[in-house]
Amino acid sequence: MHLDTILGLITQRETAARRNADQITTLTSELTRIDAELADMVTTRNTLRMLTATEFTADDPTVTSPAYQQILAVLGASGAAMRAKDICLALDIEPLPKHVEGTHAKPKRLVGRNALIENEPGTFTLAPKGTQSP
Image 1: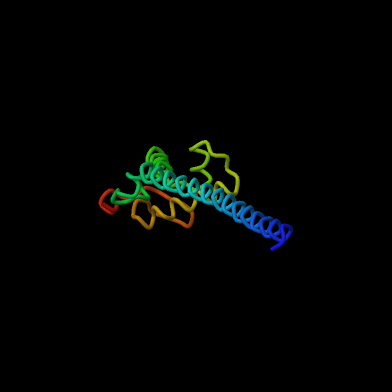
Image 2 (image 1 turned 45 degrees about the horizontal axis):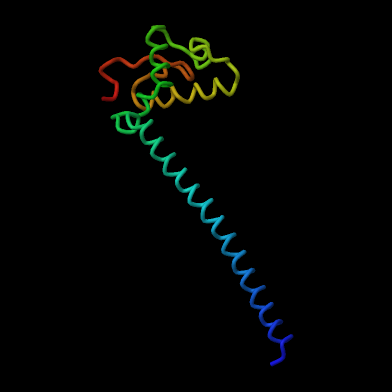
């Protein structure tokens, strides 16, 4: 075999080896990124579980969340039927349509849980103690 042929073969092998090394470097970087992402997901999951442990283990998670407790407190203090806009104002929430709609959904859910009564469409009061869910 001629020396130029041998040097050409060596150059081809060297090029192939560098290409493989570059691919491995790229894959190693991608693996490191994915491992970090997975670790972040585990941390997020554990944090969410810790923060919501009481919410999801309570008999009625809807009623134990702070937003629902605030609505119940406002209606309890008022003693009168209130509309979602009035509840927003009582909670110092700007009565923008999006806030009123979000606030309206919560008492609707509490009606389903027998914690509130909707006397007239959109008007909510506390349910009598004997009718509330346990």
